[in-house]
Image (cartoon, rainbow, N blue to C red):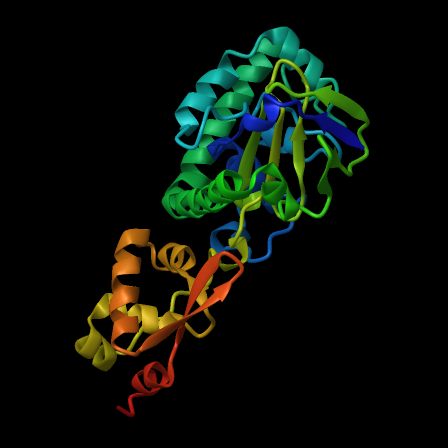
Length: 309
């Protein structure tokens, strides 16, 4: 059990960040079979060769090096900025962390600085070839998660944020209890929360100095991220326009504005404008699920989709 203890100041210093390199590590581990994914995309199921040394480090069962994924400074952190920090990691820190990895690392250079640079180059390669082409879609999902949880933090405080973050995490009084094998108790000055596309179903915790204490958790809506996009008929598109028709076709199940924006790869503002118009025309209606508003097709919307109106 890890205990993260807040005081009156640190409880107000919960912030969020997005980590491109966390998605690189997660994608590699998914390819290696070390992580599951509720909706594994086709581009991860294709046979591929991974850099041998990086695969060895990330194939460990119990410990992943923190220096390969330095905590982001905020939601706009880039892969380039994180890679620069990886390459600046002190050799003694690299040696300390690699010594904790429960895997055969005999293929790595014995000099920790050379090992660090080799792994950084391989991270950059995997980022460019595997993750970066899909990053805009992933980034929209992560931003939507942060916006949702930031609203809860502002309106209801930290308790509401941690309530549904992960089953292994609970806030008891001023202490955040994390149900994992490690045992430690840390007095917090601040805490960084990092949503991850490839975090599912695990919970990651960074507590090893000099890194800022951070929690990596599965982002909301990941199961639908790679869902096949519904294509409306040309006839429906001619009546409603291509975007409105796509929204109507997509709403087989109620969904929020953010979820629809991610699925259709549009801005939330654009989607909201079209949803409002469709609701005014009686094609869609809304229901509330907790704090979220979900749109659904009405009978008229179903009839339009079937082409009987």
